[in-house]
Length: 262
Ligand SMILES: NC(=O)c1ccc[n+]([C@@H]2O[C@H](COP(=O)([O-])OP(=O)(O)OC[C@H]3O[C@@H](n4cnc5c(N)ncnc54)[C@H](O)[C@@H]3O)[C@@H](O)[C@H]2O)c1
Image 1 (cartoon, rainbow, N blue to C red):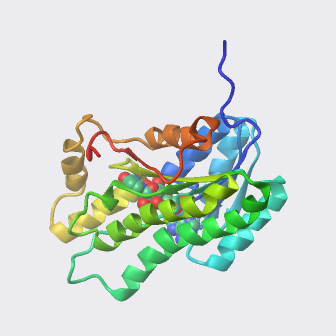
Image 2: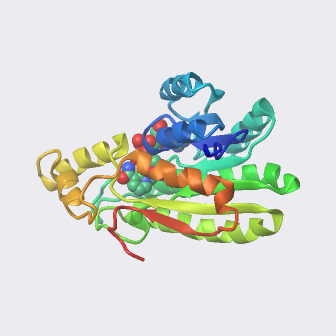
């Protein structure tokens, strides 16, 4: 018997879906039958992903969004809900990171990391919850990171912002559970995306090592013996967004090849 598409008829809004993990989640959800709202600062990249989704026979629309701006989060989520006629799934994926030495990290850099990675997650969640609560259903998935537990000395702000995402996942899961809405998080490891390539370049400069060296060192630590691909994350995201995960909430699932065994 052929298995049914897991997300047939659902509508998902995915932040940061123009690239990397967000793009892979968007494509996987579309494969599973969902229509997709792509919300990203990078509209051109978003349109390319929308084209790939449309080629799969699903609907995709692109919205320019800076998740660091709570008013924009609300406006875009309400607009997408009106355009698609509903919103079943929110994936808070947009995120940034830069390696910086302890003595160099500025208050502005700290605030920017938190504005995107942490405040963005909460205010998109709040905007989606306003729509989902009266409907008594919804699934919210946040991108945390292995960095929430495996701290690096040069990722202080990033690690703290992702630990806060784990905490927000748990407290919003409790707040939304009585309304039939689940909130869970994904914690990927060393994923081959444009973000990691940028981290690698910046690390090379800070450490005075060749480009590619930090990536090589990190991948060598992974028990499963290979770099993580965005699709490794997308499959678990599709599970969390599906009915199969209806009884899970407040959880952070680690997808990192065995780097941190919890
Ligand atoms: N790559 C990894 O190894 C890794 C590991 C763990 C967690 N993560 C997390 O996964 C998520 C996706 O990372 P990625 O590696 O795919 O990164 P990426 O840089 O490839 O993609 C991030 C996307 O987010 C968008 N974006 C950035 N700032 C934004 C903002 N203010 N508003 C809206 N969109 C914005 C970018 O335009 C881009 O399309 C991030 O939250 C990241 O922290 C990544």
